[in-house]
Length: 156
Image 1 (tube, rainbow, N blue to C red):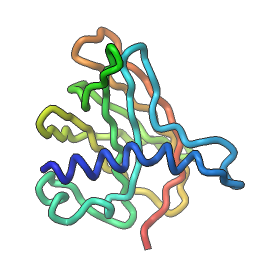
Image 2 (cartoon, one colour):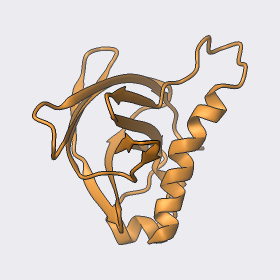
Image 3 (cartoon, rainbow, N blue to C red):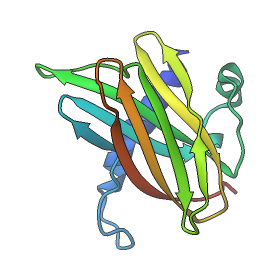
Image 4 (tube, rainbow, N blue to C red):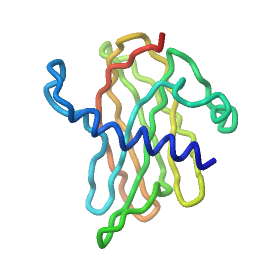
């Protein structure tokens, strides 16, 4: 499904451009990746209704106005060349402001040379969620940990 990969890539890589626009209600850009040496962990959270019904059916994803998908991918850069998403072990948690913690169950999406990881998460409108995600490349002995916070909105 190259359309699915294209859709995820667009979502993953357009977020930094959107977040760099001057906004009075958000003092700093939204972080969407973190580097660990030559590795980069990319992360985004988007409403599950952004995925078409056909793609959702192929990958067994549920679309709902109150459900987001946490998207994780891992790339590696050497000599100015960056890989597509690499295979890794991915796990994580989502914790709201009253410390209710939910385990994220990631589904592996492998398309050609690219691998992505998606985890569904149900939420309430305007819920603030702190994410902690561990990503362990096949070649690394210790996982990389990324932490980020998002305010989630339901689709109307």
